[in-house]
Length: 140
Image (cartoon, rainbow, N blue to C red; front, side, top):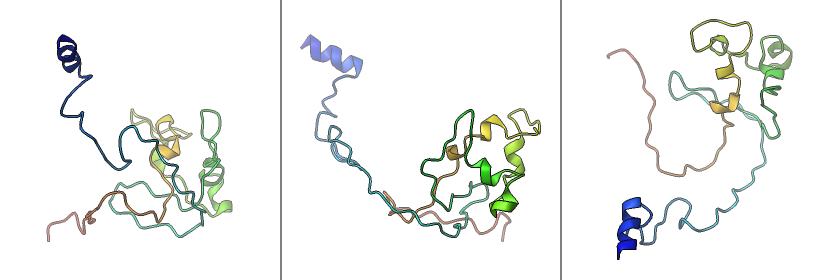
């Protein structure tokens, strides 16, 4: 009995959570199934839903290398390469560091593109979503 009390105090045993739990992935101890592999097809960029939303990536990025030495995204989206690649130019916001100083190169906090930008897909939502974008920031 003392052992169960001690485990409850440590949060390692809780009779409330001892029941069978289910969620998006099933029972907690079920193995995670492999996600469905999709063939990627380049597509037109989707519209953004809100003012500061990072744009979605409208093409495959499998095997894109992004690390402290190389950033594959910049081979097309940098200010020197975007025209010849017909790519979106990197926003000026990507050159401002956390102290508000404008730099000549991409800021470290904006260098790892996939922190904010994700490939767009036509996957079904995991949960119902009733989000509606705001129509205007001004009172009607």
